[in-house]
Image 1 (tube, one colour):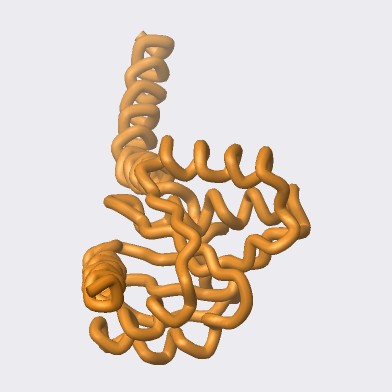
Image 2 (cartoon, helix red, strand yellow; image 1 turned 180 degrees about the vertical axis):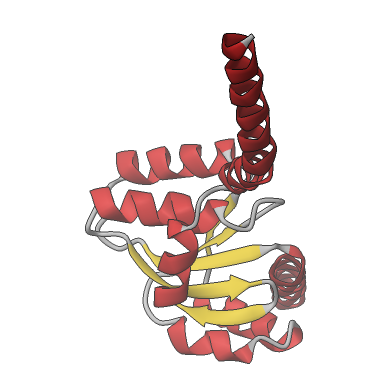
Length: 167
């Protein structure tokens, strides 16, 4: 009877991982080998604050979940100790936090992941991490949209001051 219970728990775990792979905006797979407990705790804290779920999972369970989620290309990077960060609303957050942490801690290695349902390698994850945050992109867009109006207002002001000086 114990075997049936264990199998059922593993099937439930595979279903949960598969759902997370499908639903998360981005998923980053990393090798955490060499990090001590304090470093992993700090990393988990940073990820939790950004709304990112970070789990150490068995590769065999993740492989079965990738088959269920039609992401079998991800199986190539599921070698050795594997930790997975499942992103919430912000697709850049998991990549950015893990990449920044990896810069400070050589033991953490980014392997690859899934972004918007597409499997990507560690180069694309690092490129995603280098992008500005959503708020940063919105502020850049806002400043680009304001520039013509601001320049027009300055020109009108300069013309008005010039006319005043002549009068």
